[in-house]
Length: 289
Ligand SMILES: [Ca+2]
Ligand SMILES: [Ca+2]
Image (cartoon, rainbow, N blue to C red; front, side, top):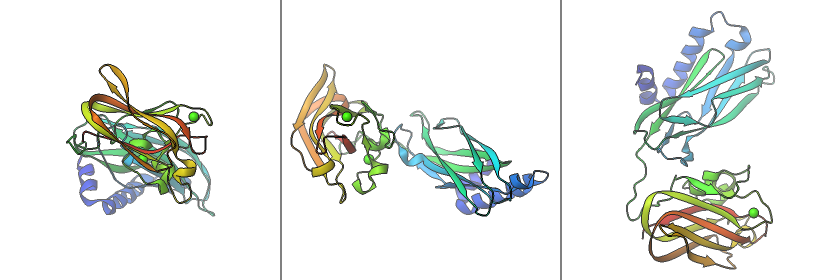
């Protein structure tokens, strides 16, 4: 671990800001006036994630603000410590000049391969001769004890994923329908069924309970927008097996219990929704008991 990274991690945001300013000052000498006046930022300034593919806590909004008098095209190069993966490695954008000052932002998601050891890592954005470092803490993956949600942050799959939603939204630990755009997933084949959403467990487990959350907010109640007719299927050594069939559902949360069965994948097969258009899943949870 570099001395610099250790400093950033230990001291947090204050040190990060100081470091950024120090870097700007030190490297700004000799560069053009517009390039020296670009401010790099990120929200959040530090993230903690588990080394699992659908942990979305690594979503960061990068931003650049041109406080100079001339517009500029800027390439931001994104790099990360070994063991981390980025959703993008380059962000090229035009930065309009100040007055009115406009911040331009772009998302990047950092995830960690399952073999990545817990510890301190970093994501770096280099642009306009500056570098912004975002500390990334890798924590222990969630356990697989009897009460653990075995689907949490695990690899999700779907027959289709609408571009306005995120595949991992259905296993990201967020059940809040009021945050539907961030917390859920739906298909991109309107008025066509069935739609499938499922999750790969880390191993085969003797499971006996699946919790399904469909869209159910004050604005979009389940009775109008939730999934209506669906089957819960589990993949056993013999193949896919239906453990529950729900029809005419108008609830936001449906609990499916069944005799213990050894399975390494779980999926929801939706045959209709209450608006007969999209199959909206907020969260899929899988338990041994
Ligand atoms: Ca969710
Ligand atoms: Ca569909």
